[in-house]
Every structure is written in structure tokens, then in C-alpha cells.
Picture 1 (spheres, rainbow, N blue to C red):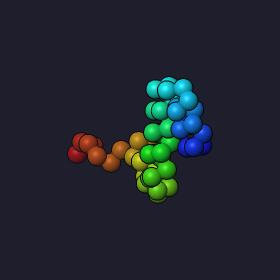
Picture 2 (spheres, rainbow, N blue to C red):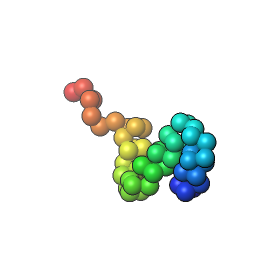
Picture 3 (cartoon, rainbow, N blue to C red):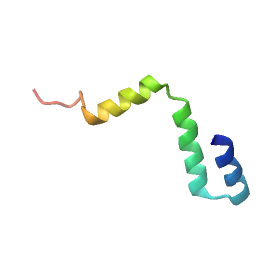
Picture 4 (tube, one colour):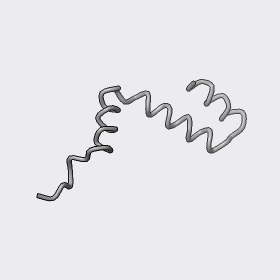
Length: 51
């Protein structure tokens, strides 16, 4: 998928396709555990809870 989006971007110069490429590239650099932790934090924040 990464190669495909880069090819489309290089042929079209589309900013939207570049942003998609960058998002995909960044997602690949995060471990599955980190992704799961980030999603859980969105659902059940542990910071900023008043006492």
C-alpha cells in the first residue's frame, strides 16, 4: 500500500495522497501494542481525572 500511494503521489502531485502516504508510513512505525494503548487511552483516559 505504501508503494502504491507514493506512486500515485509522484504521478499526480496530490497533497491528499501525500498526506495519506505519510499517515500510512507513520502507522507502520508504531507497534501494535502502542496502537492498542493509544486507542484505549482515547476510550478511557487516565490523565486529567479530577480527584
